[in-house]
Length: 265
Image 1 (cartoon, rainbow, N blue to C red):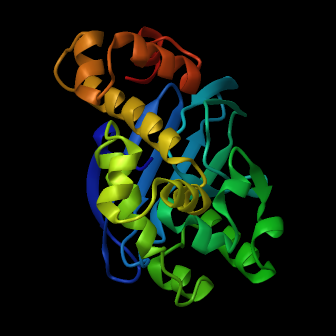
Image 2 (tube, rainbow, N blue to C red):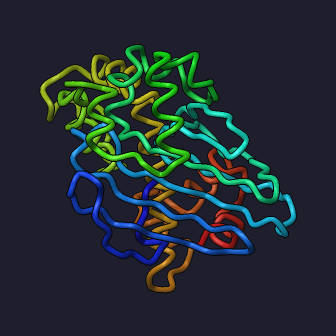
């Protein structure tokens, strides 16, 4: 998730003249930099670069589910799509490795792939198996040369836009992750069954799981502000109680709430 709350932001100017925000984080020999993308018709949210210094020991990093999917290229020449995750993934990055990625706006995933997004849930798929040969070649080259901009993306996905009918429902889920799904569907004037099926197909995750992931991410965001007890964090993030928070962090991250905050605060 492109999250400036974790990082220090500076303005940069994109090649197409649009304003973006670059953010960076350095920790234990690893550097992560992300840059907001504007003018991409809402298809993508940011590009990012992750570098592990040559002297850094190889270690597994826990990647938490964040509702997003990414196109990724690494310094060995591999390129792949990472689909939306239903749980944490332990990823080992070798010393001296650089990875470049572009994060897909969740409501745009089905439009970009041309197929139901839940087909790529918890998946890692080579560019050549999910994109046209031109898209795969041009995107991989542009990512590794840090040359991705809105104009290039417009050329690769000409005239494509997110499903605007999905955007409202998705926004309601992440802005009100404790509101019953039947109420959100009713507010949008559709049946609960239709809403569940359309969101899952477009975003790759069920409405219930979207809300669950968003609540956990809200806990992490809240924990970086004022010092709060676990009970207070749970209440402010919309959990029924602290036990509810504990069940969800176990299911999504494989950690207790205390372990989660210690590792990802």
